[in-house]
Amino acid sequence: MRTSQVLLALASLCLSATAQISDPFKQYTISAPDGSISASFIGSGASLTELWVKDKYGKLRDVVLGYDNRTLWQTDPDHPVFGSIVGRYANRIKNGTFSIPISKNPDPNSPNTYHIFKNDHDGQDTLHGGQIGWDRRNWTFVSSTSSSVAFKHLDAGDENFPGNVTATATFRVSSGGKLDVSIVATATQKTPIMLTEHVYWNLDAFQNGNKDILNHRLRISSDKVIQGDAIQVPTGNFTPVQGTIFDFRKEQPISYKWNNTIGNGGCADCVGYDNPWVYDQTTNSLPSTSLYSPTSGIKLDIASNQPVVQVYTGNWLGTRRKAVHGGPTLIYDKYSAVAIELQGYVDAINNPEWKVDQIYYPGKDFKWSTTYQFSVVK
Ligand SMILES: *[C@@H]1O[C@H](CO)[C@@H](O)[C@H](O)[C@H]1NC(C)=O
Ligand SMILES: *[C@@H]1O[C@H](CO)[C@@H](O)[C@H](O)[C@H]1NC(C)=O
Ligand SMILES: *[C@@H]1O[C@H](CO)[C@@H](O)[C@H](O)[C@H]1NC(C)=O
Ligand SMILES: *[C@@H]1O[C@H](CO)[C@@H](O)[C@H](O)[C@H]1NC(C)=O
Ligand SMILES: *[C@@H]1O[C@H](CO)[C@@H](O)[C@H](O)[C@H]1NC(C)=O
Image (cartoon, rainbow, N blue to C red; front, side, top):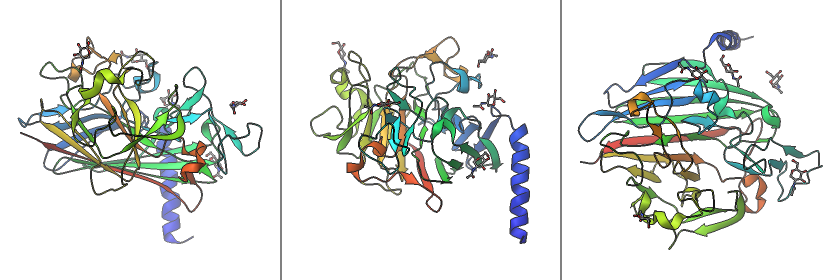
């Protein structure tokens, strides 16, 4: 063994020792040197529990949804997924089934076909990784500084996915109101990996009498959405946004076509969005989604290496708010926040005609990175 190997072995010993004693609900807070942003996290789901940024008056607001009682991250029957990392495969998987190599309609009896627990729409499909996805797993604290923190998760073939996947999520805040999140995942055999960070934003933080995001301005650099069937499973087709409720190429109030979204929000008679937009280009350097509230003046620009963004307007919310948002008397009602989920093409593992490769293996690591940049518009 070389010194570096000895050190590695020692480090992993320490890690497994920490794993046994580390409290998944212990909160870690990081802050930028200039005080422009601070964020808190727990090991459970590597979840973002609080995010404080300055509004146009210079006052700090906590702009993300969460719970004060942190055990609810694993027990809330509503399971809205507040600020957690979602995996091993985020969003929907048609019939909870895929094959390796991938195929359009996998033969359910083939040894190359994998069956994941169907936890969505009365057992018709898989959502967010199965019965216990990564968002409800106990990630292990790895290390932290005053402005960064990292957690690690070993998914040892959980939920019937093939092989082990080890993921490390690193969160870093910096001066000028910036949060950088990166996740690297390594697999021991061929497996699909598709991750997201599932943060719900309300840029007013429920102040000034504000209670929903209908007046938040949204911009998405995308000319098409992935078409879903009646249970939001991709059909394989795309819908051009031109002339539809999905056209946010120019910044618009989220509600600008609200009444036309009827039937789109996940049930026949409800309104709202829960759709995947495909970015015109995948670029880490330019923000492809922006969210802005004229009330607080807070603007969020999101740049990512991921090709798709799922935007969900909280159509099914209904849990008790954090005290800082007026809880526990008040609840997070529907449309009280918008989830913006940077991810891969939804269910590409059942749509080989897209030619999107989401299979990872030793030597091919999965890498996810997203920058959340805050500013104020006066
Ligand atoms: C927190 O939630 C758990 C359920 O996860 C519940 O058993 C417990 O009583 C709650 N604690 C408080 C202080 O409300
Ligand atoms: C869906 O998966 C189940 C196993 O979970 C299988 O029995 C069934 O044949 C599959 N349906 C289709 C249409 O492939
Ligand atoms: C996570 O840890 C908590 C507290 O130790 C425990 O109650 C829970 O069962 C663990 N969750 C999982 C999915 O292992
Ligand atoms: C997968 O993880 C389990 C649990 O830690 C371990 O026993 C097993 O050896 C791992 N398999 C591989 C191929 O690394
Ligand atoms: C939607 O329709 C309702 C009832 O017709 C109306 O009161 C409301 O103002 C409309 N909302 C928007 C955003 O157009």
